[in-house]
Amino acid sequence: MSKILPDSVQKLIDEFGKLPGIGPKTASRLVFYLLTKSNTDIESLGESVTNLKKNLVYCQECFNIAEQSPCNICADPKREKNTVMVVEEPLDVVALSKTSYNGLYHVLGGVISPIDGVGPEQLRVAELIAKLKEEKFDEMILATDPSLEGEATAMYIAKLVEKDKIKIKVTRIARGLPVGGDLEYADEITLTRALEGRNAY
Ligand SMILES: [Zn+2]
Image (cartoon, rainbow, N blue to C red):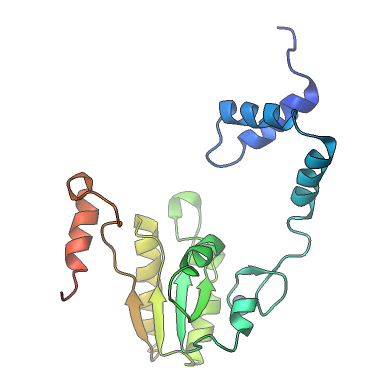
């Protein structure tokens, strides 16, 4: 079969195709869109990709990605330092920063998932327990995803706290129906959890 696409075009299609949520069709569309842009625009994109990780570090307190350690959140004197929210990924911090939550975070770097070969030792669990043992926090909010892995990870951490007899109030974010969601289309697990997490009205 004769080659149709120039190598440079095919190469970028292949690279985009490795990204999450991007199939071969979308990858091709993106590349052909870029071909309509000016050299300056394309160089600017390339530069952003090249420099993406250059000036990034992990905050040594919360393990979020940052430009310096401690990060802006950990170093912020206006933050309530007696509460820590445990999340899976840096993106969760971005999502939660849009809420009224004003405490600190701890980014695990994933969830326990035996199928993917991820155990607690691949995550920042030991670092979390070490921090909790200093007993500077009054409350730890477990905010891992309401998935099987997220639940298992939250439970694992809660059990460690119990085993080590660390004095802290452990809470789990309430699970339930998303705003704008439709009761009749919700799955069984979501409905059960929405009922379990019901509040006084
Ligand atoms: Zn930090």
